Image (cartoon, rainbow, N blue to C red; front, top):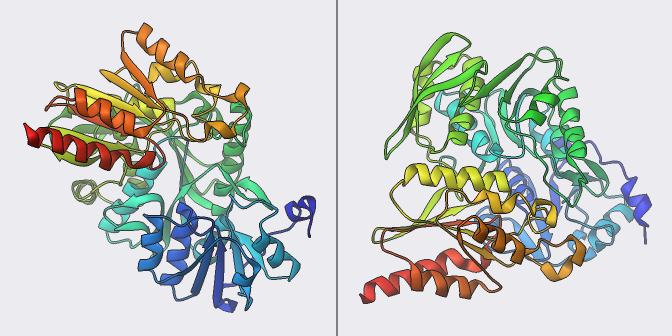
Length: 488
């Protein structure tokens, strides 16, 4: 058995795509891994994959792509030997398939390194990075380029309704990719975006996250500093003016920098923001020059900022304001980002991926902005490696200002954490009550469903926030509410 030190010292192999026929994914059911598997299968390679558990929606996607999948990890999955093994970042050194692949000399690489070698090497990479907003900004930037006829490659950490999935194979010279600061693989302990060789980059925000691999904000900033080093003076960076840590990081790049925001006086800014039930309208200025009036289907000031970033990139690629507006008008959004999951009469159930206090705050504020006269329930599952720890103990209760009622689920896999690391859910509830909020926590999803079903009103908005499945709560609440209101 190869020891952990030897595995961590393993060097990911550079890929020559023309020599590859069969690719095997260890950990194929992850969002990024499954997306890359789909891209490679669609590109004509034979693709197989294994994972401990393969569930919807990724299992459905893999089936649609006709990718052969195997449950569990077993060396026999690599017999006969593939030409390349792509190892997911969740794989541990003890993984029997990883052990076997290295022992047998089968070339192994990480997901982001493979993305570079197969798709980015001869293209202009547009990397969208940041703690918040990168999925939406990636999807919108990709769509603006697609709508303008540039036929970009696109790789998104979510499901784009426009692309009917999480990727678009490249035909033109640009590739828009979501850049994640999480590490790449057990033998490739650098942030994923380090591999993406940016020509252009967007920095939406920099805050503390990923407490399982970063100890403090300085370590997070160090990761983004590495991205800045990879931008050349021939490239360009857009950085949101609302995040001081992001501005600090941006000062280190050699590339020209443009600040943007939906408030204040950045170089690219939105002014005269107007709301309707269908869209947000705003004027865009570059320094003192008015660029154009735009309207966007995405609600919330933070989504105006996301739109500004995409507009900035599009303008730099000589896409006209008229073409940009055409793209904005036809942008259908991302699944699980302010997505209306169901309507039960006048009552609305909304699904959102928010899992960081800042994301919770701005998402619920956007819902309040969109539905100013309705009662808003904020239902949150502390699920991410950071959200279920006590790092956000003080920040979390301050994130629900726009919500009238707050329900918290029990932190995910609480029993697998050291007690001193755990979020004190009872203190969060008490702090919310001290702020005058109607707040309750429940250890079981069905208890939340029963509580909402009993107390909901016909005009309420139920905002559910989690970066996981939350025990099927969306479907359960919708069905229970439909039964209750139909009975009346």
